[in-house]
Image 1 (cartoon, rainbow, N blue to C red):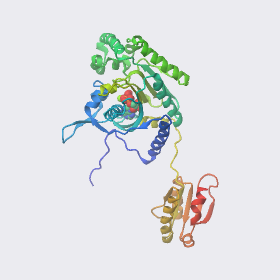
Image 2 (spheres, rainbow, N blue to C red):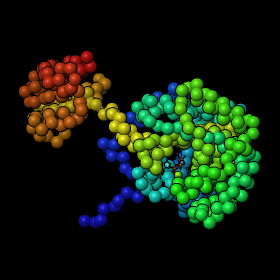
Image 3 (cartoon, protein in one colour):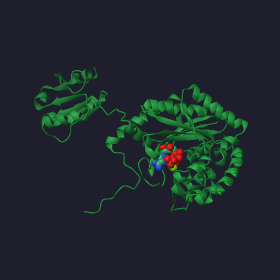
Image 4 (tube, helix red, strand yellow):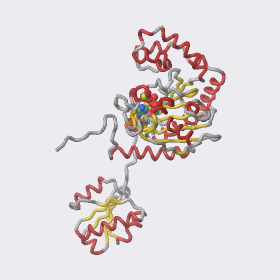
Length: 421
Ligand code: ATP
Ligand code: MG
């Protein structure tokens, strides 16, 4: 026998016992998105590499070391498996004129690819659901996105998520802050780690976004962007906070929250689960008013978030939130040649009447089939032996709930109506 072929490291299969949680998340999230007037956009998984270099930022972790990039063997075009959804969404909106003189509320979902070290909550193929709102300038949309996520946690039954917010100000404000920050960090050259040294001049804000305990104090005392904010930026942040206060949403202002992507301005936020250790961020987002222009479109404001579906499902699991299991109406038990033939046709008829029916396969005694029926989570077993088949009747046995264990014999034609009642 030849050697078995394994899946790719960091890219997971979703097995049948896990897919109920995914389907549940998808059902809840679709209803939730509709409640806020968001419409779906679907873009390809492969985009041209320069889209991400320009749209995510040359000096980000994603572009520096996490992208799956390759050359098209036919024409040498540089392509990348999407590491995130915003750049592709903006590209499509510009290409199809969706941002011209109009606002858009959009969402997307699907696999994303990042070449990271796999661990719990961090994978090489993972799934995001993201939302982007274009053409809105006020802090009200920023607040709505945050409120919307709080609503999703409630709909999912997820508790204990913490919200951190910050403001990044506008470009000129960041430039003034940056100059002072670089001067400050230069004094700490010799204690900076490799990443820190590399980023000192390319992306000094990111030096503060460090998980290295030895650098915490230095990061704590660095010049703070809030002290550089102009009146408008300050008002935007105050407006956001007021709306969150009105909605009764608790938050912590984290001045060091800068997020991994280069293109954010003003509002940034993260929702963090305390159940997931260092992979605790389940959703992050913010405003990126310059991105559309950066990617070649007419100026258009944008704000959005992305959430990691695997991390949300891990948090649900950690909190032991009960998930709805698939529940067939009927498990169809049959033994004997005549009976089996009849059962095959009966399953088709019952499904045509709107019932979910699992037809037993593979033979076996009534006893072993009943075991399967119990394990199937079905509400009823319909049982046919040759004697029932000869008389055109079946036994209907209630497996769950009120009347569990009861059994009646019914004409085949009456089964569907009885089960639905
Ligand atoms: P982190 O700091 O954990 O690396 P990030 O800032 O890179 O996160 P974003 O680019 O903002 O993450 O992506 C949005 C969300 O997608 C994250 O909050 C997280 O829930 C999820 N996510 C990001 N990278 C991964 C990954 N490799 N595996 C699983 N989920 C991920
Ligand atoms: Mg990351």
